[in-house]
Image (cartoon, rainbow, N blue to C red):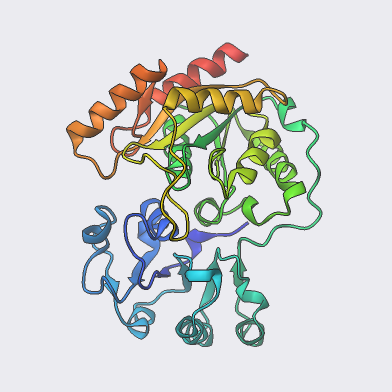
Length: 356
């Protein structure tokens, strides 16, 4: 179990700090801003986080790593993924400087910093921890349907694409359900969720045969003291690169219900590593059918609500998009950040009570 509340973080997001390019940084800023001393990004240096993202307040963006270290962080949190997944040479010098000053490194990269001969050796010599949160635990099980047997109501977020708000939807719902007096547990399946919640498994780093088993193990752990288990979704069934992890989560978590997440202005799958978009996102009603049919052979489930990401729309446009989604699918819809998660929380409470 990690302990983010014990640290003050300098976030490394050099060259990519923005609404769509620094998902990890942005989510940490949204959910524990009081622990962020600064963001390091030479492109946006001199601004505040609020000016770059539209939220986050007066947290400064600094263009000099040494200046960021001088602000008193106790850990460096890597908030972006470098191109190609490899550590850029400049990053090595920055991380080395942080380790030499006794700062922990929190990383969700596929490249495990703790295994790096230079940086890992330095950390061990200095007695400083490197948290490679994407490193999967040993001895994960093969899924065998045990997640379907838990007593709490299990909800999985699924998406039209990557980076459309599946984690954010669950965190917003967790907070709202807790406010209503329910024991709601968020289950992190990606590095950013692990940073925020302090535990979980980054399932996209798990060997394919064990993705569903990892999801099952997480549900069993999350169900230990909960009325509702909110499983963070990953990828999309229609994404040509990431559909495998999505299906593993769907079958391994055996959810009682699904919430479909979509960025309202996105018409095509967005991540082709430089290629032109070619997979068109189908209508929401069709996506609902796709997910329900994919889940059915293992455990029958249904989509109970639509979560829209409308960050790049005006408020009238966003309200219109929410209304269209509800009309098209016949399901409650909202942007849980902009308009609150109330309609989705209502649906969860209604369905959970009906299931008992």
